[in-house]
Length: 272
Image (cartoon, rainbow, N blue to C red):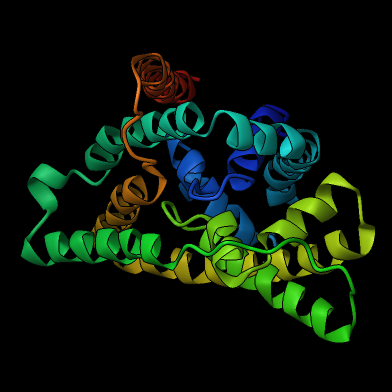
């Protein structure tokens, strides 16, 4: 049975995956489907694969629609209104933290080692702020070496993409592939889309198996690490304080909108 509701969920995840600094895994947590997503990806390669297709196909359709439709819009927002856009995503991310602490029952279940894992996760992601690079532009001449680079870029980025707090787009930015990939999507360059897409699919499958194992064996420790990853992403996304009052007001409004969106989405998902 197809879960068509997952189309809009996939669209939200796809929109976030285009943004450097925002993780599709974080949006899955906000929507309350992270555990189910990891289970479905793992189950896709099992004898019960048909059951999991009903979850994954609508989600995949939503992601593809969103990435193709919103790539240009997200680029435009970050070029013309970077501060308010980043503050909106900051609100989304901070809004999901109370749910994560509640789901992990942190008040009763966290010990010193769980706090240590949380700090490690936060420092790991926050340290990425020191590795931001300026890309010169998309790769113009594509050869076998370029395609291999793009394949492994997709593989590495998707491994991060499935983890809350670590942005696949930000990983692409760090390794110098973001502009080429976004330009390829915007201009429907099928060769780039296909090569990066294959790398993304393989990366998601392999990383989801690791996450599924740790969620099953060490659920509290895994959630402690995930919470740390999400907290660390706040440092990566934070663009600094605006220099004038109109910009500050716009950022406050978009931050509040992101915060309200996270809480509203969470309540809507858990009631339905």
